[in-house]
Every structure is written in structure tokens, then in C-alpha cells.
Image (cartoon, rainbow, N blue to C red; front, side, top):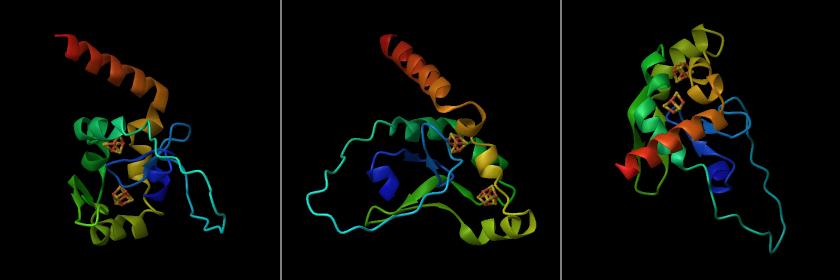
Length: 129
Ligand code: SF4
Ligand code: SF4
């Protein structure tokens, strides 16, 4: 969620950050630093991905543990839960960390720019009708 807040990408239906350069294929870590007046980025140009995920659902269909929620749970404090961790744990342990949700994500298969272009064209075209 911090990476999303920093504008580095958007959390996909599978609960992983989708980044324009690496898709869902990256590991992220938080560094806490002690710097005053650090500029804060409040702009995230990747939030359209949420809409795309609502139509796609590929990771949810292909997940061997049926662990990915079709509707992401959103709690009162704004935090989200995208997967059932107990259901994920079995394929994750049995299939070498699984990673089906990464490999099946369209942002891994096709790349960010192609999807963005097609998705925006389709939406803009629909808006004209
Ligand atoms: S790691 Fe495997 S089981 Fe877990 S959410 Fe991803 S696809 Fe499903
Ligand atoms: S596979 Fe589709 S629904 Fe799942 S995170 Fe990737 S783009 Fe979103």
C-alpha cells in the first residue's frame, strides 16, 4: 500500500503491486528514513488498473488454490485483503512458491504499455457512443 501511495504502481486483484516497468514481477521493501521536508508524491497515474482488474479476473480464475477473492475485501481503515492466505498456503508450499498469479497476470504476459493503450482506446471509444 505504501508503494501504491508513492505512485509506483497499483495493487492488482492478486494483491501484488503492478508496476509499469516490471508488471507484478518485483519484490518491494519499505525503507524508513529520518528526513524532514521530504517531498510527498500524491499523484498515482496507474489507478486505472483497478478498473482493468474488474474486467480481467484472469489470476482469480487460474489460481490453483481458489485463494484470490473476486471482490477484494476493503476494511474500515482503508486496508485491503485480496487473497485468502490459508487457501494460498497449500499451493504455495507444494508448488515451489506457486507464482501462478504472477505468471498469469496480463501485465506480466503482455506488458503495461500495450494494455494501457488498448484499454484507454476502448474506454474512450465507448465514451463517444
Ligand atoms: S501464489 Fe498461487 S495459490 Fe497463492 S494466490 Fe497466487 S496463484 Fe493463488
Ligand atoms: S491477472 Fe488480471 S485481474 Fe489479475 S491482477 Fe493481473 S490484470 Fe488484474
